[in-house]
Image (tube, rainbow, N blue to C red; front, side, top):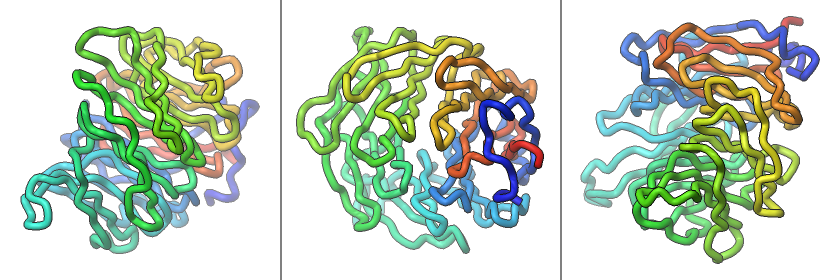
Length: 331
C-alpha cells in the first residue's frame, strides 16, 4: 500500500488526504503532543509523548493500527530515534543501578517484541537527541556546561565529544546533518544575548560558530537532505535558512502562520513540513515558503511533529487524542 502511493510533490501536495490512523488513542495525552520518527527505510514509525510516556511503534508494511510494541517507564524518557527497522532508541532517566546510580541510560528496544536489547550508562544527563538521516550517528545534548556527544551507533560507543556548552543556557532543539558531519543546537540564554544558534563541525575540536536568528525563541531545526542548508523555525512566522559552508543566514521563508514548531524536509528537499502551535500542520515549498496544504484538528493547546517518510510518500502527524495520522496522495 505504501509503495504504490505517489511521491508527494509541489504539484500534488494540495491533494493530501488521510490514509491511515495508528492507535490506540491515549485519553490523557491532550495538550502534550508527540515526537515522531521513521526509521531510515520507512518500515517503522515510532511516537513518544512529549511528557515522556508512552513510547510506541508501528509496522508500516501492514499499516496495522495496533502498535508492534509499547514501552512505559516510571522514570520517563527523552527523544527517540530509529537507526534501523529492528531497533528503537531512547534515553531513560537514572535508575540508581549499581553500574551508575545517578547516570541516565541510552537504551535500545527490539522493534519486533519490545524487549530491551542493549543499554549504555551515559556520562551526563541528556535533554535532547538527534540522529543522522542514514541512522549511523546519534547526537546527545546534555545540560548546560557539559559536552555534547556524537555516537557511532554501529559500534555503540561515543565517537567524539564536542566543545562544552555555555552555562546559563536552555537548549530547545538539536539536529545532525544527513552524513553526520555537522551538528546544530538552538538555545536561549539567561543573559538575554541575541545569539541563539550553535553550529559544530563534528570533525573539528574548535568551538561552535554562534549565530543570531531573529526570533524571540527558536525551537526547530532541519538539515536539507541534499544541500548544505539548515532550516530554523521558532516563535516567528518565518523560517530562517542558514548556509553551513558560509556559516550565515542566507534567506528567510515567509508564510508559516502560527509559528514553525517542528520542521521536516521531503527526501529531495523541495518541500518542508511544519507543525504549528495549536494549528495542525502544513506543507510548504522550500524555495518560496508558499503553503501548499494545511490541516488541523481544532485543538489549540496541542502541538505534535509532522514528518515526511524517507520515501516521500507519506507525512505522519500526531493528533491531540494520541493517535498518529498518516497522510498521502490518492493513487
